[in-house]
Each structure stands twice: as C-alpha cells, then as structure tokens.
Amino acid sequence: MNFAMLDFSKNYFELFELPLGFTVDAKRLAERYRTLQAVTHPDRYVVAADHEKRVSLQASTQVNEAYRTLKDPLARARYLLSLHTGDPGTDSETSKDGAFLMEQMELRETLAEAQSSPNPHAAVARVLTHLAEQSAALDKELAGLFADPTPANLTSAREIVRKLQFLDKCRRDAEDLEGLIDGRY
Amino acid sequence: MAYSDKVLDHYENPRNVGTFDKDDPNVGTGMVGAPACGDVMRLQIKVNDQGVIEDARFKTYGCGSAIASSSLLTEWVKGKTLDEARQIKNQEIADELALPPVKVHCSVLAEDAIKAAIHDYAAKRKPE
Image 1 (tube, rainbow over the protein chains, first blue to last red):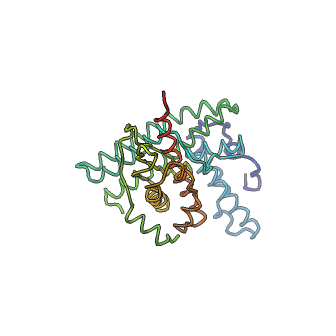
Image 2 (cartoon, rainbow over the protein chains, first blue to last red; image 1 turned 90 degrees about the vertical axis):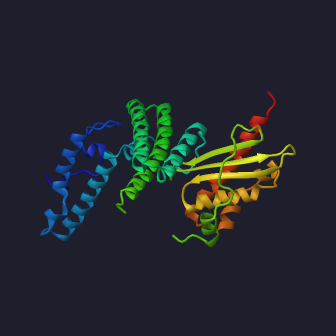
Image 3 (cartoon, one colour; image 1 turned 120 degrees about the horizontal axis):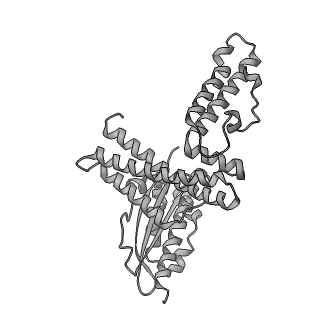
C-alpha cells in the first residue's frame, strides 16, 4: 500500500478502520496508526518527485491529526459531535449550570491552596484523581449517548462535552502545578 | 498578545476579590463559565433594602482579561440600582479595558455573571 491508495475524503474512523462511536479500541488504533504512518511517512519519499513528496507530507499530517483526535476522549467527542451535527460544540456560549460550576470553582480553589499545604504533591494528586474519576464517569455516559445518536442524545452529549472542557482545563492546570512542585519547570 | 495597561492593573491588583455568604438573603450569586476556554467566574452582589448594590465580590479562574473584566465590573456595580447594573453591556467593559477581539468573550462572561447574580438575588426575594 502507498499513500496514493488512501482516501482522505473518508472520516477519521473510516481512515483508521474503526467503528463510528465514542468507544475506541486503543490497540487497534495504535496498530493502524503504525501502518498508516509507515506508508505516508515523508522519509519514504526522499528520492521521490516533488509532487509525491508534497502529497506524502499532506497525508502524513492528516494521519497524525486523525490519530491525535481519536486518541483523546475530549477531541474524539468533539469530532463525533461535528460529524453528527456539523458543530463540535466548542461555542462561546456561557455555561450557567450553577452546581457544576460551583464544584469547578471549589476544585480550582483546592488547587490554589495546594501549593501552600504541608504536602502539596498529595493535595494536587487528590485533585487529579477526582478529575479522572469525574471524566471517566462522563466518558461512560458519552459512550452510551453516541451509541444511539438521536437528536436528544446528541444534545445531552454536547452538554457533557462542555463539562469535560472545564475538567480538562482544570487537569492541565493541575498538571502544570504538579510540574512546578516537582521543580520540573 | 499584549495586555492593555488597564487589564494589567486589574490583573495585578484585582479589586474586590472574595466571597459573601451565598445563603445571605441580601446576597445574589452569579456562577458562570466559558466552556471554550474552561474559565470559571463567580460574581456576588450585596443589595440593601432600597435595591441598591452596596458591595460586590468576585473570584475568577481564567485569563487576565477574564479577571480584569470581573474586577472592573465589581467596581462599576457598587452604588448602582439593580436596574442600572442590569443595563451594563459587555462592550462597555471591552472598551474600557481595550480588549482585543479574541478576548471580547471575557467581557461577555462578566456581563452574564452580573445578570446571573441579579437573577439569583431576585429569585431569593420573590415572595413564596
């Protein structure tokens, strides 16, 4: 197989020969990525014509982008939303879910206080664990909703994606803080 | 991206950071968030019996523009009636802080926060 045989009008799931849905077989994703990478990698086209070099670079970029999207649950959920509805749900509309936002505020406060706590590492680790549990629960809901993508379910999925974006931001902040505490920065 | 001097001033010296007791009947709490960037904002107002905002507090986890927008807003609403506070438009905040177009949504978040706080206060005051 070479890159010319790849059809880039396919969606990412088709490109990776995976069933359309939120649940992705990580092993198959990784295997297929290696295969696609092998046939599209620009190193293979060092002695090829300029045109071939260019196309292989484009193909390789697209394969990488598809892999990144399918690998990350939040990116995958947004991609599924855009496939189903044409809208990835990353609008700028304000969230007003008071209880959820209050909890997000408290998590960020805990994180801010962690730095001055006697055991900052453990405090940040607790926040990260909590975030991971919350995300896992929401991911599970998403799997069910995307398995039956009715308009009502897609509306619910969009709400969950919005929540996951807050959790994701908090996780990145927590990881940055962890790095800071470990003196990695 | 360069922040304006006014944004930097509010970012470095935020006004009225803190909390009121959200269960106080004279306090209205607005909780809003921007899913696109993950910013979370809490804006609280303390209202007297004449319907005038006596004091305001905020806490924002977000970028400098979001912090400055909410900080500025707490200054502006003090001494205003609820009706006056409701009239504040995000564009006035964006203009005052010289927010670039990509950061205008931060001022929208602040406007939504004061509206939510007024709404919360009104809901508390509604006769049973």
